[in-house]
Length: 310
Ligand SMILES: O=C(O)CCC(=O)C(=O)O
Ligand SMILES: [Fe+2]
Image (cartoon, rainbow, N blue to C red; front, side, top):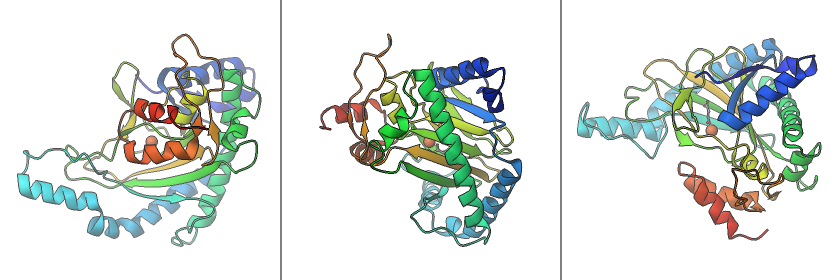
C-alpha cells in the first residue's frame, strides 16, 4: 500500500469535497499522508535542499568523529564480529539540530538562515491552514486548535523545525536511523528526501509500509496531542527511519505544537471506538514523561497524565 498523495490545490476548487474526504481518510486511517501543490514555491524548496545539503557537508566530519552511535556501532562490531552483534536499541544513526526563532542558528552556509526563515514562515502558514481543515473535519469551531495550543492567546504555539541527516551506515541491520515512535505534539509537516527513502509508518494492522519519496511533497502526520484533542479519532501513528548503507538522507520536520503551559483536553465527543479515556493535562507535563518514554508505547504516557491535575 502506498501512502495517499493529495493535491492540496484542489481544496480551493470544485473538487473541495473529495479533497476534504481524502484528508479525513489520511488522518483517520493511516495518520500519514502527503500533500502536493501546497502553494510553497518549488524554487524555495530547491533552495532549502541546497542549503541543508551544504550544511550537512560541513557537519559530516563531526558526525564521523564524535557521534555516539558511530562509536557504539564500531565497538559492537569490533567486540562481537560481523554477523553476531545484537541491535543497538538506545541510539539513532542521525545527525540533527533544531531551528527555533529564539535559539542560535547555523551561520554556515551563509544563505542558510535567510532561506530557512523563509521556509519556516511558509510552513507555518501551511500548518495553520491544515489545522483549519482539521477543525472543519472534526466539527470544531474555527481557530479552536490554535486557541487550545495557546491557552486562548496567552502564549505562542511552539513552532520548531528539526533538520535531520541520516548518513550512510555500514550496518543498517544493527541500528535504526530513528527508532520507532509516535510524535508528542500537534501537527508535523515533513519535507523528506525525494531520492533516499527510509521513513516507514505502521498501519493499524501492524504492517510497516514505506512513506514513498515524492518530489517536493510535504508529508503530514499528527502527534499525541491531536489524538487527545480528537478523542482518539486521529491517532498518532508509529513511524521510524531505517538506516541505509548508501545515500545521505535529508529531512526537515516542522512541528506545530502546543505551548508548554497549554491545557490539552478532548474537544470532540468520544466516538464509538474510543472509550472516553483520554485525560486533560498541561502539555509541559506530558513532555516530561515523553522525553523519557519516547520510544515506548504511548498509552502509559496518557495514563500518567490522568493522575496530574490541570
Ligand atoms: O526524518 C524523518 O523523516 C522523520 C523524523 C521524525 O520522525 C521525527 O523527527 O520525529
Ligand atoms: Fe517523528
